[in-house]
Length: 443
Image (tube, rainbow, N blue to C red):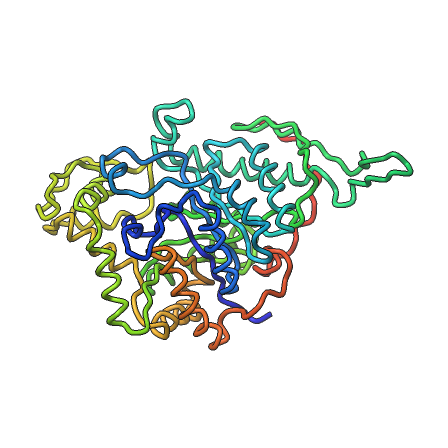
């Protein structure tokens, strides 16, 4: 099979992936609870023959800083509920949602995603996260987030339990035989009876085996623990956008971890984020990107940088930053912190400097051909298997990508021009897992 560049369509903030994308004249933030708004997004992605849409999520409202309430568009619908509605308004595209393994229980998640897989006829996927913020802990009976290593340990056991629950029923166990009066064949039922360190789950699941066997598992995480969990369990990995050389090293190292877990390299797709700003000309694209950056309030700039480096900063975004000693933000994330590293090296930088640099480093700005060139180089040079497209403003940014860049990728033979396979797992080139009869596990 010819290797094909994979595409995911990302949505998190109501107005786009940039925190101030909702302020753009073309944005529609007032429609963030309107099903037609999300239907347009999903159907646009399907028109572009994307492999999946991806609804990011968090179990909190970001009010740690005043700007989180004043300026930061972050209210959103619960993703699995929303995807169930979108399943009947689309026909082929994958439907992926973020699900936290720290603040959910395996039985609930196994049941909900199996149900979505049945409703969508094999298009469901879940993005495993372990969550990051104390704000989430405070919504679920605690004051502080679980230790980083402990929540990844819990996440690994969570996946194991979910898989056992999805294997509760043989594919042919539901008979619904009117003549005999047998609804189900007891010989096709297995009880997980899982007893581990974090979970005790008897089962069986009260939903028949999903069409995909196991709905597709995505994961994001740049830490060592996150990469290990992804290499062992994930079907695809969302990655940060990095310079080409760094991206190639990350790609090679993660594929090596996959092999070390006894899997084939192509069993896990690596999908870096792509934040495109596209227009007919590079000048127009750069002007749009600069406009979006300029729309960011000073309070967001200061508080974004303050959060990322773990210290309070003065309100003036142009004041040089003196890094505080003994800063520790490791329990939120162990991914590399480039901002803090630069400050600790002695560079005199302001919050505006750091914010603007991060912005320009994270976006791909240019004409359709230029953005396609960058994607093709990364795809063909061992830096990516595809991309998760995060338009800075909605719906303009994403629709511009579909209308301008996708035809260029299709012309080059990099992406599909129509859907062929039925399920998302098939589309990713992954075999349907054989059912495993669960064995009891004790701590």
